[in-house]
Length: 361
Image (cartoon, rainbow, N blue to C red; front, side):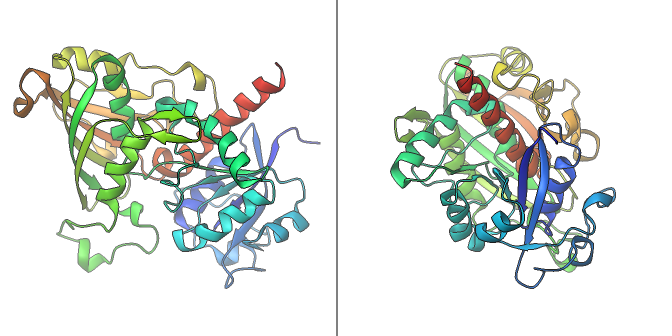
């Protein structure tokens, strides 16, 4: 019998659900035992219901898997051993479905935005705030369930938040001005109409600016018993959709608490490491890859750095708007890997390591 943890993927037919399936195939810690879909796809074979849009081929071992209803009872009937659930559900479904799975005793690793700002739900990028996973205890106590909900961040926030962690730790951060150039895959499938995006840039993505501003402050905040106290920094964002397949770029202008040169900022990011994720299957060797070349990062060249899990930094230079405390740079992160399925997977690996460590105390 396999020693891997049995898991389900909720919303397996969509773009993020497919990325989950791809990343979980042959994973050393987790094994897919159930796939769920919407009412119109329930009961169909995975290959019949899913239009595969992820690079490569649909895993042959899952092509004939019958899709279940997105309901904990249906999953438990088909695969009663399921412990972890990876959710690629849209917001309108995640609102009720994810708490139902948590109440049924399963740990839900969510990509939806609905629960990210809920007081007792940890919003986690492990290298940034793995300690916030401890909020799960307060969530379980308050809600009386044995499962739980753990959210990963909005896909645009992952690069900026990873880059800010060493700056907050080393120099302190007062203000951030960020401008995103977001890839098409961030809109899901079928996504943005071709006549809207060809030869064009869309300067509005509903809800994205608010997510970047709010989630960055929660991620960099402090755990206070039953909630997270937001980091005392200001974030202002402009978000744009651009004609790139994968990889969200964000320009960052940062006012530090203490003066630092671009060289000192680059070194802080280049040497940044998080022992809590070291050696985990989805953790990159370097969370932050810093380029010195003037024309990097670039989505086509750099989005798969660290298997798509590294944030790539470039063009680190002085920001004259903030005087001697100012620095500006570019970030790039793969939005469907680090910013979505891969981020949730690393959250699950990190929590599993902590659970096993506590069990051995």
